[in-house]
Amino acid sequence: MRRSAFVSACVAAAFMASSFTTAHAQTDASIPKLPASSWKPDRPVEFVVQAGAGGGSDLFARTMAQILTKEKIVTVPVNVVNKPGGSGAVAYAYVNGKKGDPHVIATATSSYLTTPIQGHSPVNYQNFANVAILCAEDYVGVVRTESPYKSLKDLIAAAKAKPNGVRIGGSSVGSSDNIIAMMLNKAAGVKLNFIVFQSGGEANAALLGGSIDLAGPNPSEAAQLITAGRLRPIAMFSPERLPKWKDVPTAREQGFDVTFEQHRGLILPAGLTKEQQLFWQNAIVKMFQTADFKKYMDDNGLRPLLKVGDDAEKYIAERNKFYVEVMTELGLAKKR
Image (cartoon, rainbow, N blue to C red; front, side, top):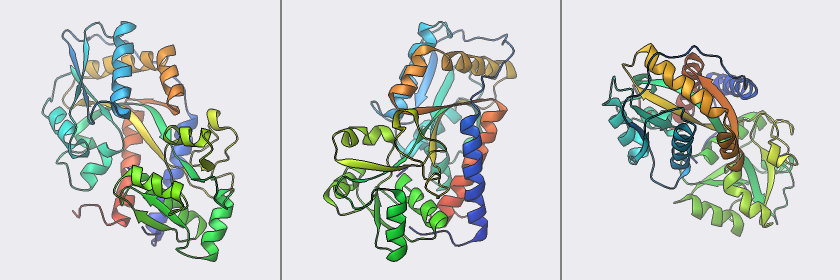
């Protein structure tokens, strides 16, 4: 996901609650101890990815599949199958049709929640077993190096002095940049000017060219331009400073309680037995602790966020509530 400020106390309260929950979840990295499962796969596993080959979700799935088989956590082949389309709607409709089949697993990110909220998918998170959350991608506020804004405080001061004068761009209404703008508007009492572009690449070009003042990509997306001296990070929208970005203060440190993340998790079809779900919970916990998966998270700027079973279900329900409030405020939620 990549224009308006919050106007109701209800929506404001939801954002405050979501920020607290996220912060708590990110600091709770304990490894759960689970009983062994009496079931295991007896034929190849189909690992469904809701996006095309080469993207973040594809890399996530292929990394997991490789580790699961290499470490013999799963002793049958794990075959990654890409089913892009409809911002996840195609893949999740397919998985929904596999009820009772424990040999089908799938990736899940924010579109797993936002696509149904917008009415673009007939199924939602309640149609699946949300077996695990593994990690989260945070966001960073960046300006071009020539920008007069040296910190988020500088940018907010300018926005207070001139409402709609500070511009933030993104690829669509409802994008991560749009959500970050909304949260900053509420937290700082300002009105940022959100500008929609045709693509993320067009928004990046506008930022580098000075047509907009701020963007909110993932750190891994901005790393190359930051290293090249073309962009300056002014705030992390994470609960704490990230290990690879220790010199970049969080928005909270600068007085603005804004955190935002995209999770990466695993889901199963409905209709599985407790033992079948327990097998996959155990498999994820074991894989999560391997050196290869830790390296994958470190290399891609991902923050560990392990939750399985009921904890994963609770996390997904809380994030869904958050996105319902966001999409409703943006006028994107389907009216029920």
